[in-house]
Length: 174
Image (tube, rainbow, N blue to C red):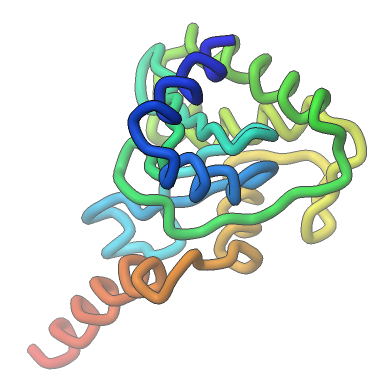
């Protein structure tokens, strides 16, 4: 019910942000992590939006971000992947259950992170299949988002790849 309160508050503060976020319903979300994504453009931050478009992401130790704007821990959401085939009730229940698990967890960059949070939610749903995967983990979610996630804008594409290309060209020039 916390999400409903967040949505109601956002509606009072600005209906436009809510309309943008509602387009993220039933989506896995991605944003670049400054400096890390610059060097490895396939590495980023993952979150997931419920059936209303409320964004959830495992932001750090014992912390689940809840937003009704198209942002996560490291900034604007730049990619999304719509996941269909599940009822609103099942989708939301799985996300809330994953949130309950991860709000009690210590964050670990390499083993138990935002990708694990999203994988936990997806693994609680029946019938989800993406790129041939039906069980999800950090690695296959990174692969799925890199090859299947859609950019929300040209700016998102540039945020992911332009720093990498600039660093690569600089390294080749030296």
